Length: 442
Ligand SMILES: Nc1ncnc2c1ncn2[C@@H]1O[C@H](COP(=O)(O)OP(=O)(O)OP(=O)(O)O)[C@@H](O)[C@H]1O
Ligand SMILES: [Mg+2]
Image 1 (tube, rainbow, N blue to C red):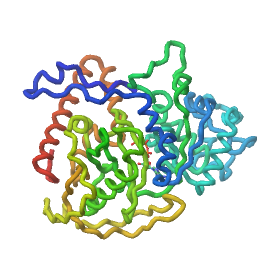
Image 2 (cartoon, rainbow, N blue to C red):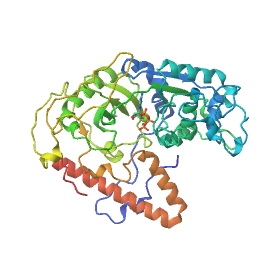
Image 3 (cartoon, helix red, strand yellow):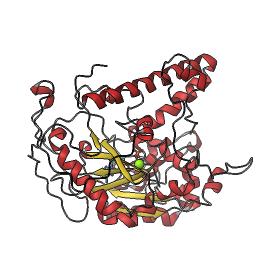
Image 4 (cartoon, protein in one colour):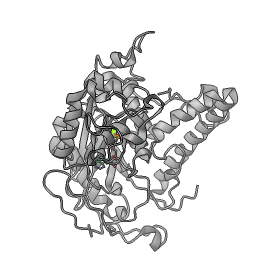
């Protein structure tokens, strides 16, 4: 992944009265921090609070297959022609993926190099009820869903899994750039293979999570810095009226969960924790732990503010549900405070979760304690170029494009970067003085 260093000092400070930060003040990134956020590292600690999943260790033969160019899938059944239309082909037909390197139907079966892994994946899919969402140690192939017939992460066969993993840049990042920016990582010397170097420290694994229909509105990212929750916010960048009424309850549950189940248990002091809080919103599920690093998408926050904000006051144990009936904007804009129809969210575990729609109307404003950000209707933050889906991965691409466009390109990029920092700073100030303000028309 290209460096995310902001533009040079003179670009950022030349025209502004108040000096702007020119680098993001992250603490030094270490391999041990990255490894602590690897799914197989934390899963055993939080298993009772994690949707049903299985971790399959991956041999070097399999990771080499993932790193190799081209997409060659195993035949649907060993020994059968690729054009088979058996049920085992899942969403994808392996015959449809024949490429230049695979011009005849008799290309070698790649799974011959990792038969146990192939068998384990097939058995695990069955064990998980026939449909799972794949992930490597840190990343899910969210950027590759376009290649799936269902446009989703749902996999029904081993070939569905391989196709998503092999099509994903995010997965490639795990395989080739896991320790980028780590101060204690020596990049490979000439002639050394990155895979071999990384695998000295990393036990690669495939995580298969039982697939369920989750409601993206109820996924949140919680930012913890030096052992204190700084804030939290939606992961999905759409506006959901019903979240405003639920905010006090969600916040209380998430903070309580963090205090009782995560604090003192997860080894790291700074990280971004992803949680899912399905109806009836009494139980918090851990989806992921992400490094405190620029590679993690700050979502509705910006890294600049997360890194520079004051430490919060000591946590109040048990934030109360405060009923605050503020009128912000029009009635239509603030919504009715009731949750809309909620998607099915069963199968988090072996036992079923309740699915009743939440009717609590507890207020629309945020309660005291760490700020809980929601997307306002027409919130510009949802549309900022650096806050769109997978922005942490798009930004480096911007840097790459800018660098390829020569000095002019870099200057233009630097200007955009400066504008972005200024905008974030303005918005942080406005938020501080105005509180919830859904009329922001920037
Ligand atoms: N068991 C599941 N069934 C269906 N969808 C799931 C399941 N688990 C996760 N997802 C979806 O996949 C998304 C990505 O999962 P996850 O957060 O683990 O990936 P990630 O690569 O770590 O993402 P990020 O880069 O944002 O940290 C989740 O936000 C959720 O919407
Ligand atoms: Mg993650």
